[in-house]
Length: 347
Image (cartoon, rainbow, N blue to C red):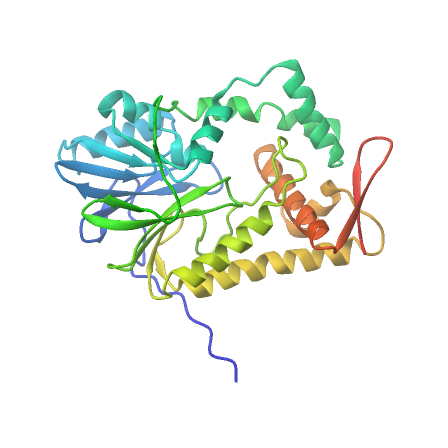
């Protein structure tokens, strides 16, 4: 007989209001900040660190987040400074206020090298004719029409408005090493797929796992191909990371994720996420069997709702991640027409 599946358990039934940190473990506070997206929040974690607080991720670099942070610093944190920052990865809701905190407290910022350098690249103003033309070619090759392509151009500029820069130096996070933070020893883990080399922290002694975006309850983190790496296979990286986490971390560890609620049941959730991507691959294989499809035609196979331009960019990147993954595994073949559009057929 197959063992009964593990059930996810939620020690905190309801999330705290925005800007009101609550304890989730001794010396650790959970702080939620709003996001102006369909996914309307991000979780940050504060760790008592000597005379101040260490921070795991910063929140989006917008005015609403700054206002909430100013109130938290003066109120719930008792005016104590931010002593160190760990940034899990380069997305704006995680690194957005790094520059803002640097101006106020100049704390050391810990990041993996790939995430620090990727943030630097994204912070560059790439709205030049050559860059826009390359991004436009990428989206046209996916089978998108000109109106959709026009709506997707300029995403790099939006990144600039949602981040406040980086300090000129950083402390590198290296997988397998230990970081002493908030009176605990945390093993540094990293994983690709959602971002180039996302950092996570695991405290084995206390059964705590700061998971960033790699493992979330109810939702799957976006795993996308980006225009600068059109033939990448981030989905293989992500699925490999899920297996590594299950091999490394005990199932009864408290997962502190960057979205939704903290939970117990890491292995079950990792299996669910892997099965989710396997199911998507099966649906794409079935759709591409009768006739070849473009990436744009694959999007509605795995996304069954209307998408605005912000969501469409993620959806196209995610569809292409599955297509490239299936090519790498010998399930699909790709052909490029004279118009430069790629089509995919099931072998």
